[in-house]
Image (cartoon, rainbow, N blue to C red; front, top):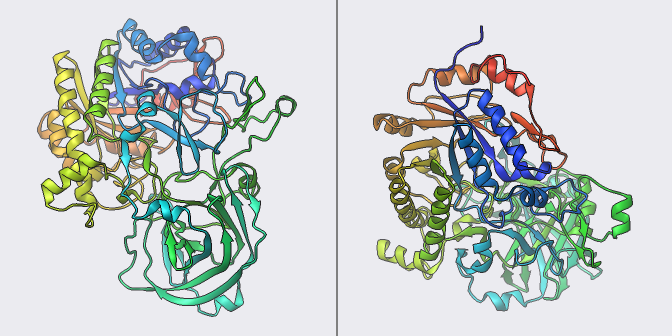
Length: 635
């Protein structure tokens, strides 16, 4: 006899990624939801797919030309079924299931860039930025790019951008460095003696230049290389010191350069035995003695667009999102970027394809330590967070509220507001949030003009959080006026905030870098969702303050069970979760089983061509063994 799980269980469908893998029809949605109903589920969560289908952090998850060779069917799916959110709500209701829509206000798209001058499949979906043309935006954002979260102004920026590059300095620590590599994993990089400079000198250092971040050519000018031991203050990408005292470092200076302002991009390749570095703060460019603003990336774009239609047809590559328009004009559709420290292919790819800047911000786990033989360097800084609208503008809050209203009109039984998104990737996150309404609100609250004096980053996040709360308050009134439920995502970093870009913290790439009042969020919510990762082990102590507060208010509290990303679907996790009476529901994240080359994902149900949907029995059998579904389901 299988066990019985005594809490509510509901699956989550991330709508748009499912539409990319196979051609969807209305019958596909009906069959998929029928299979979920057979498993005993009475509620389904649907991740919203707003107008223009803002692009995720995988370039394949986009509206690609239907003639693409990458196995993407998004356009065909949408044409065949109409509005996919409405179709999912309609079919859920037809089966007597409750439909809760997860809306992500900060998911504005723009996950990747095209080289300057390269066309995209669909017009009016790009905006210029560091790295090229950022593509795949929310339709409102494309029309109002100036309403995104803005960067702190850099004095004399335009003049600095016109200066020649004459020197590059790279700083490699020699003292011990402890690098976090996973939720509980660390690597200790041992201290290196001063003699390492003589024993392992810099070799094979080459420079490359580009004016479009599409193709790079070898820099053929003369330069000198000088290495020395220095004591210096090491900082993260935000300029925050990493240690209490100056650190012993190996400083490599490349001097005598003459790279003119027409070259907006350059790259460095090198052979160095010990090359641990935070490139976002420890690779710097100068014009004489004046430091220039730069953005550094270890990620090369996956492929080049320099391929003809004939070549594309005769040599199809399932890993390449590469296309050519019917009029012969090449369009560049990138595949997943390659980390130059993890992929040998990246060392060749950047010469044809360029770099993806601000991909995953500082990284996953710590301040951005990495070891790579190659980095791309762009002049300047991102003027805005990629695809993140700024909550301080009334127009933005009104746009979000309109989306809530439309989802309710579609029949949503509740709206679940989630902060996490794919559009806020940035390494120097503390320098964003300098839009005029925020600057004025900060001065009114704290008496400091942050355009003239340093801001406290956490206070700045709180100011932004206050503006976000205005939207939540209005959304609550609207949702409740329709007699529907407001669900809110809350996580531990809102309760115990700290300045960090590590996984799940306020500066992490998937967070919008705001700090709303979590207690007020809980008060407003009808149901609360915890979006923290568990990594396969449920801990009653994690976010205990939040759990206690929600329980005291008598409100339902849902926790995520990550099927693919977090390995939560196991006996230990479910057993420990069952003991915690404060948790009332479990979200199975996500439903779609997608065995596709470009977006492989373990889930519950696989959609097939022709409208068929089938169970992924390995996952379903495990769910049944753990008591999460009805027994004896086979199809």
